[in-house]
Image (cartoon, rainbow, N blue to C red; front, side):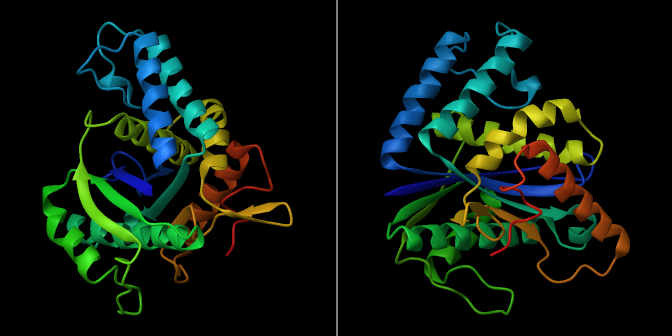
Length: 271
């Protein structure tokens, strides 16, 4: 059994140029290992029951220093990579998505990552559970994903219920996996925002390499391909605006730079 726990970030242009949605895929055994690892990390760095262990500094409890908070987040990412968690992320420029309602934007993101997760399950001949961070506006859509499947760009629906047996919601502090998702996705967000000039590139170069390695992909001839697997930049259709094209090109170039590994980068990833 696999578990896919997701969340959203950069919900508006003020936070960053790209809306980001995604999460972590883990097996039963990995879920237990992550639980044990995060529990130990929380104890080591002074997080008390009820304290949130999240990426953003403002969520840091008063008794935990900034240095210890940073070390705890780094330890979580290191544990996730060691354990073998896979990361799936969806990104779209706010300027392109601005004509969508927040609800529609969320549904499109859910459709994309649901189908990516389904493909992962199919490749591994597995079944799984899909849990998103609580959003009371999405109950009906989760039911639709189970009953009909995600809607593709050509309008057709693809059934996924033969492998995804449950769609549901979770919340902060309802599991250590939720904390791990927040930290992994928060780190990815930081790097995307740094590519746009909001953030320190030195920090992004420290954060991004393990996240790059965690992105779900397929290795062929020593190269790991992540486009349309762990990394889903949208839209898939050609971007006509020169300015928008340049923003995406800059994003790919900067993420390549931060990754420190030319063989495993968003810019080179193709199906």
